[in-house]
Image (tube, rainbow, N blue to C red):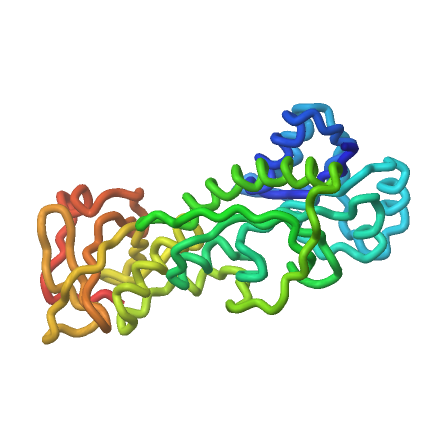
Length: 310
């Protein structure tokens, strides 16, 4: 097929690569404008642009999509069969959605209609779901409400993190997109309405979400730690310094201890009481230090039983 690809972050890259590998003719890549990053404010390409440049695919980076007649005419002139949209980052207007023969195929990182929104990967873990997956759908003017084309389900590992699930689903999404285009062209897939969503909207993540409330049950905090790994990360304060917690186990607690109180210190870990059960801290990062196992941390830093994390 003749394809216009729209995407921006790392999650989008495997799908673009799979389309290229499958010999689809990628006519153009549309991605967000380059941004200055780091202390030196160096302008960096988006991950999708980097791949497009590698394959000499023309790149478009409009500041806006809506009411942009020049962009619309440029896309129309390409005479594409389909648009593929993966984490592009902007809502597309009706005239773009209807521009090509097969419409806009979107790769979404959840099992729609569950977890519509911008952060489904993390919310699946935060909510304690046991499975996730990828859905391809035809975009409409709503937010992740278009008709479903194909889905692929995976079971979550016991220690699944936001990062590990992101990487798995990005690869699955690429394969599912290629299969979706194959079936669309052959006429063997029938778009199916989603119906109502049974889950909360997967709203955008913020840094403040990572603040650990030790009054909450340990099982919820452990999911928070995994879901927000690697960003924005779950954190507390120890000795007036920010302590990021990267890995923890739910263990039995001490009913006489307060939430946030250190109830045990061993050679490889220390344990903190919560509102229900306790958390054995296995990997962490103190402000100004590198990420490390708790065992390595305790070799050079003292944590005492009875101290309070807040």
